[in-house]
Length: 307
Image (cartoon, rainbow, N blue to C red; front, side, top):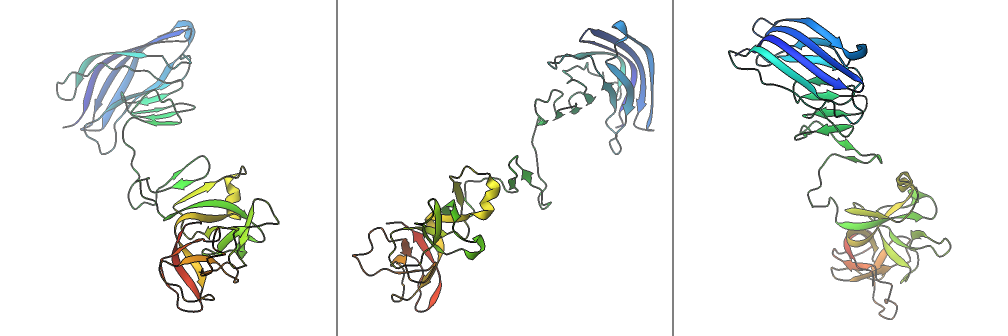
């Protein structure tokens, strides 16, 4: 069924020190894509124009819709309370009565349909003619699957997957400053407090160090940050895992490692070893081994449990 509009519209609007009344004669038919619009009368108090550029829009590929479109150009209330009252006499569709229309129109808006799209100098509304933000949608918003679409937040963070309660990684890490060059550090490195630079961290290098604090996280689930500098400085920092399960660099310099062994720092920079000297382990334990290492060096998973 094709949309058809035939009849007269009387539009009346009152704004800031202005009133305007417009009398239109409209003939529109989607069947033959024909439309005519005649302005029979258009007068304003003090000549102040609020509505102009009246036309009919017949959307391509939609045989059931015809729009009366107009521009809102000025003299509206700054609190967005201006209302356009519309009276209609005629026919719509195939004998159906065309509904009375009205609504709140934002300052400087272009309104398509009764609740379709509103655009003004500051806000855009979809499904609402009175948007209260840069973009307000009265309804659902969808990012097309497989399109690579994402949402960019004001701090530059990009999110393409919604939070569903499951973390993408398995540990909590703190973003920390490191001593020396950032590219000298790698995921799995065992980290200790730098005694020569307050607030900084560096790779472990002595056995049974009680300054041990965490492990350079490979894939942190959550990253905390105590620094007051901008987030852009995080590229100069290291995510140090302080709890959770983390791939850890280990060495067998103090014997083979098996699941359940307590891990401490070793003499090899950035590597953990099995702890065996109970007199030195208080405050030196970095975690418990989940995997095993028979000889040399490697990377195993460990539960970070500072003790």
